[in-house]
Length: 264
Ligand SMILES: NC(=O)c1ccc[n+]([C@@H]2O[C@H](COP(=O)([O-])OP(=O)(O)OC[C@H]3O[C@@H](n4cnc5c(N)ncnc54)[C@H](OP(=O)(O)O)[C@@H]3O)[C@@H](O)[C@H]2O)c1
Image (cartoon, rainbow, N blue to C red; front, top):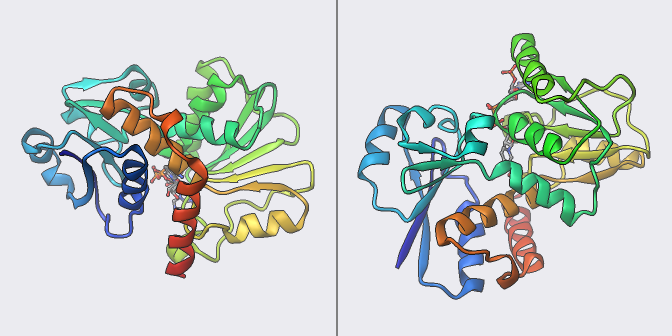
C-alpha cells in the first residue's frame, strides 16, 4: 500500500485527506493519505525518518523545508516554496494548480493585466503561473511594503511590468476572508462586471469578497479548483504518471463542496 500525507501545523482542518482519498478511490489504487502535525523543530527529523511515498507541505513549512531537502525542483527553486515532496526532492504544484484552475474556468490570462493581493508563498506561485501564462502586467498589493517590493522586483526581473491601468484579473493571496478573518475583505479596489475575481481561499467556498464582487457583476472563482488541481499534480509526481484522464473532476469537486457546506 502506498502511503501519502500532508504535514503542517495546524493541520487538523486540512481537507487534503478528503481530496486525496477521493482521487485515490477513482484511481482504484491501494493507497492512503494522512495528516500529520509537524512542528518547525521536527521538520528535519520528519524528512529523514518518514516512510511516506510522497507528502504535501502546508503552513508554516513551505519555505523553511527547502534548506532541509536534498533536492529541489527548478520551479520550486524559482518560486522559493515547496508544497510537495517526493524522494527528498521538493516541488511546487500550487502554480500548476492555479494554471489548471484557470483552464478549467476557460480563463485566458495571455495579455491580461493582473493584480495580486498578498506577497507570501501563494502569491509567488500565482505570480509565476501568470508569468508562464504570458500575462501582460502584474501588480502587487500587500500589507507589508517590504514584502510587496520584494515580490514586485521578482516579477520585474522575470520581464513583467506592473499594471498601469485598471487590472482585469484580481487574485487574493491573503487569508483575509477565512477563519478569524472571515468578515474581512482583502481589497477595496473598485470592482465592476468587467473583472475576474479569484480567491485562493476555499473555506468558506464563497468569501465575503467574492460575494460582494459577484453582486457587482464580476465573474468570481474560489480557491477550490486550484486546491484540487495542485493535489492532482502532486499525485502525478508521486505516481510518476499522468492521472488526469483517469479522474472525474466534477465528482471530486462536489465531494469537497458537500464537505465544506456541512462544516458550516
Ligand atoms: N487554493 C489553494 O490551493 C491554495 C494554495 C496555497 C495557499 N492558499 C491560500 O492562500 C493564502 C495565503 O497563503 P500563503 O501560503 O501565501 O501564506 P503566507 O506565505 O503566510 O502569506 C500570507 C500573505 O497574506 C498577508 N496577510 C496575512 N495576514 C494578513 C492580514 N491580517 N491583513 C493583511 N494581509 C495579511 C501577508 O502579508 P504580510 O507580507 O504583510 O505579512 C502575506 O502577504 C491562504 O489563505 C491559503 O489558504 C490556497
